Length: 387
Image (cartoon, rainbow, N blue to C red):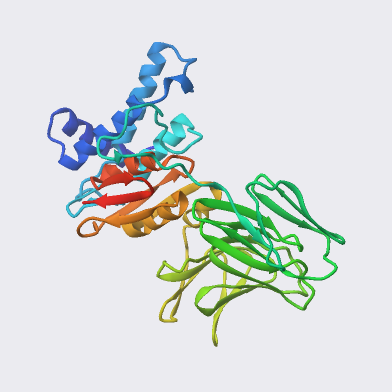
């Protein structure tokens, strides 16, 4: 429910817009999102059971609440930078659509027709990522998991099954060997290790692990980004090794590790339990809600009160931006859609807040981002960012 302060501000925005006194950014924001509403797919209309009067009331409510998300620089608590002089809160606007429409594909539900975005110049669209991965066995054999289903390995008491984006290890191998699960750009995958630990791998990520944890410790190595729910074994600690020499030790817990080589830091975020984040002789015992950041210089910062939704959104099928700069946003988009990103001129100094479904085609995601007046052009598997 909107606060009285928000309602008052909403009324002011409405009055400015209706009287032609709104700022350029306010006008642009309002018209972009009203256009989105006009493009709602009537064939999948969730309100077809409503009579005409009720529908008009609901649509008017949505439109009015959308305007609440528009804020000028003088407004309180700005969250979304449009350009140097103007800000607006996209998260509120998007959240309203999600809450009212219950759109399964994200906060904004658009008609997938022939109409293209006015400023997203499309030579062709780019489909979203999917469940894709390659498994390399100890002998070097490669199994493409996209096309191999059911039982793919039987080795003594060890059975490995692959189905619907999940690779499962059951039983104990007669002789342990190391496997590597690699997820390409434009992919994602889930893995259940022999000890029952669940691992989700993001695009452009990999994990190397034994087919049986026979020693005093359970050790795996990752690249890219992975989310872990570690099976509890008090007498056998679980260790995760990642880029830049960082290491995480746990007994049983939920945590996320982002160790992409093109990101400025290795980032470990603890959701539940306890972990020890280490680099060389530096060790930090972390609590739930904390995040460790290891930069390229080997310096470690511990941050508290982290937005967990932002950290785990990728696992739940969303991009979640929380004051995120444009280049970081585009790196995430590049990995998921398996595209390259280039910039024309100076990289715009913008920060984004909002949530977008990863099931959308690239053009739709870019159209949403264009509410900031940055422009995008799709050429094959390349996205060009234009100021």
